[in-house]
Image: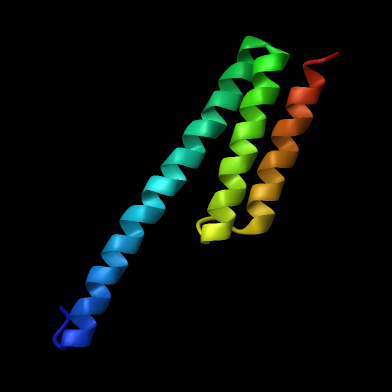
Length: 88
């Protein structure tokens, strides 16, 4: 348990930041799920639109420090490859 005033304040700050990051991570996962569902349905137009929105959300999360840039790039790359495969 924190004893000093500064340690107690740090604990409060960490709790707030954790809550915000958790919400951002959940939001990104929701957008990724939209892409997955569109791919499963086989609808290329909806999947590409969902991918565009998911890509934006992922890069916002990267800018905020929730995800590493390589992780986001890897996810976008794999999803875009699957969306392009729907066109065949």
